[in-house]
Image 1 (tube, rainbow, N blue to C red):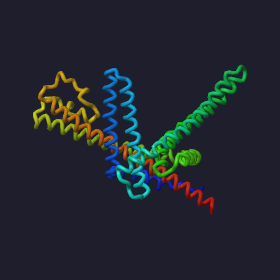
Image 2: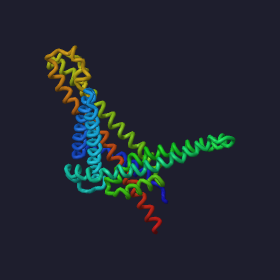
Image 3: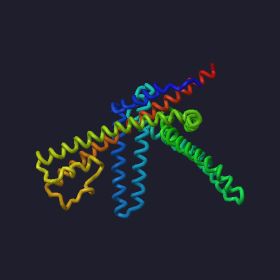
Image 4: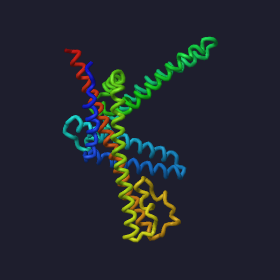
Length: 309
């Protein structure tokens, strides 16, 4: 195999910041996060009333919406990464409902393999209980277990977790997705890990930038509201929605009745801003894992051509 083109890989990961300009993917994620947040808030309310079955169902609905909404956004971002004509939002949602199960199947196969590995290690620990040879065997089991479990966690965080979705978004079937993930685990764990570190830095910078905009703009908005509108509340009360909070986070007993309408409006508007700030780094992350997948896949294609030649 030839040398890995780290420069090109880094450029592609850094280029994932362009995802913040993808209006369709942003719309899908905003809608999914808003709907999932509403379902989760409803589940919390049901749980507070002791309605456990309703709470479980509403919580499951929140996870369902968030998962398939993220997959729909991933399909749109993969279209961009591959240079394909972007599909319509409704088509992306329908396609996500049709292929999302492939992600679960791939993860289930990987989880089964991980379970078998854990069973083998547990068997070795059981052998360490034997008299006389147990302590000597344990001296070998300790480094083996540390290395194997450490590599397994690295592989899960760098390959299995982030790259399973992109294999499906690129058009792989369930079996093809399993084979592709297995190939990445055999040949590209180091490459994927380094690129994921770079993507984490890019995503963190976008998140920090979004957070700064929200905090700085929110503080100015709240101060201006108190001064210009005359809302007699501390500015922090009007900023609750910007951090994902709601009226339940406010002590209504210390709030003037005439200010409640403004506080509700600020919570709703702030919730929109909070969702947007959350969507920005998520878009960059999803586009980034698409770019990492395509980089590793193109490297595999080059290696196959080299061996074929």
